[in-house]
Image 1 (spheres, each protein chain N blue to C red):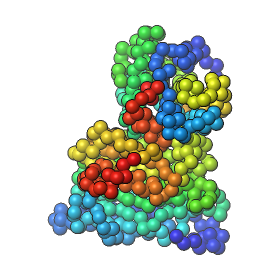
Image 2: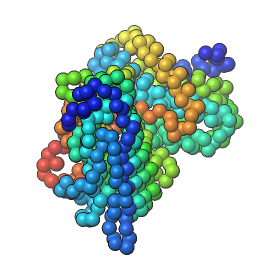
Image 3: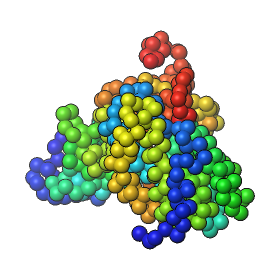
Image 4: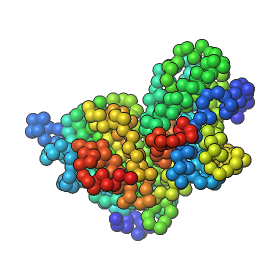
Length: 226
Length: 288
């Protein structure tokens, strides 16, 4: 891999302390725990692997593609990514979450690191597309966007886990660390796929994650926003 | 399902055939006409009769019906098959399978693949009620369904995957369904099951389920998708992905339980796709 052009910017984007709202989400883990499908650290690890190989892989592909598309100022290309991502996200609950996270991320970045692109892009972008655009405004490459997107996708439920399960932060991060090889390979594959026609992008689905999103949206009490 | 002579004799004879089904609406004779119907390889297509209750065809008696049956076992490893379906403007086709499809490994362990290309014209209807696809242990199969809908096309699709026969581990099977309408992507989902798809048995994907299914209804001019988010038990969900489009997905312990979940999803969509919600006491009582 080539050296990162902007290592500091990559750390900024991937840092969970970036005030972009991700800390309020569990990516379906809360519903999975409530339904009894995730009970311990091993289950959490399998949950994370499932995300990495399916919807995480898809999100990473769209982030890489959006980074390249935004870097060349192709706004029509971003529209195309939006509709292809929606076709791969049939769950209305997941679309709503992706829209909210996308809006929050771009709002944060336009304030933290202003860039002329922020004034031109559509104000409603799904999270992976917004993430790629954000990466472009920070001068990052598509491969950085895909890797950081996977990191964000897996870190969200990892950080939520100790609040939902009887496990401590060491357990949760151990589960995360066990998925690094899978996530790295998914990120590399995503960056490669992102150079193709968006119609042929990966479309791996996670049926239970869709069930969790719908169950969570209908739940009367919840700790996390998703 | 029968054992293929290919397996019995141990010869490698991977197939490259497929099938074509084309229906046109004859405006002069006011009838649906099977313009093309041919098949080779493991598929056999023939005109079929009504399977009884078909509310979606609006009571029309002259709809075209085609039944797909197995001429041999398979698909088998090494097979590369193409299945083409064309429903012309204004025509109606009901496409059914006569039995479940058992996807088997070939004698040389090669991958197999079936590509469906489906076109549905304006004011045309395709009802495609397929039977389960069973991933026998050791298979390595790709099933890809590409559907091109005209702006006013009606479409129903139901697909069920079964992770191995009873008591055996699942083979590798991936099903991709991509639907475009008026040139724009509407639904694109791919699911891989079996050990060749890491994470497939994750509690985020299919978990410990043995059956997983999808249902899609596109009904232009209707409002079936507006605000729809039906929870069906703890393992199924049916949602509106556009004002006139419903997509349901579910996992289940077995094929029967999966069928019940998808039946319930259809029932909740209401007339003409299923009974009106609440119309049957039996259905209401199934509400979890």
